[in-house]
Image (tube, rainbow, N blue to C red):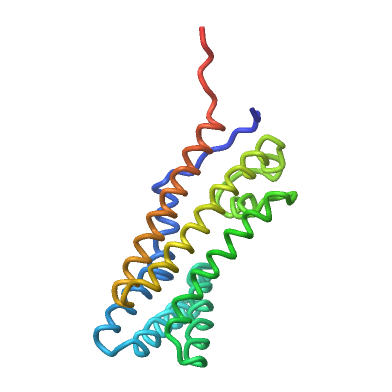
Length: 208
């Protein structure tokens, strides 16, 4: 068991910091897409979601604020997906791309298990206030290797389920169903990872 200690950030403070970017970068584009889908049709919905992402980026630039990474990544991803969909004339391609990207991420988690720093460990540095020495501890590395397998399975399952939905469901139902399925699977994986991490690195009372 590692002897390093650190203060685990409170969920409330993490939510205050992360929720605005999640809403701005993922929830709002989805809500605008779905509303525009009923109002102006599929292609209009694609443009509406992309326009929102550009406006979100422009708002931060105009106010002189740093652009949240999730907002920027969302804008870049929507740009690529929309351009490819319009170039091919296929809406199916637009919705298939995220599933393919999720599957590739799952394989990346698997492949990184043999690296000096698993991908999950690299990502953890953005969220956990720990020293580099803590993350290089052999015990900690074993934890991240095991958790990498969990996230690889979650990503591959997510990609498989959403791809199946894309083939089986109408687009209007697919958009909501895919979002719910992804949120549930990712949320369960996050909760399990946090609980596992806390149990491993929380000292247990000595027995009498």
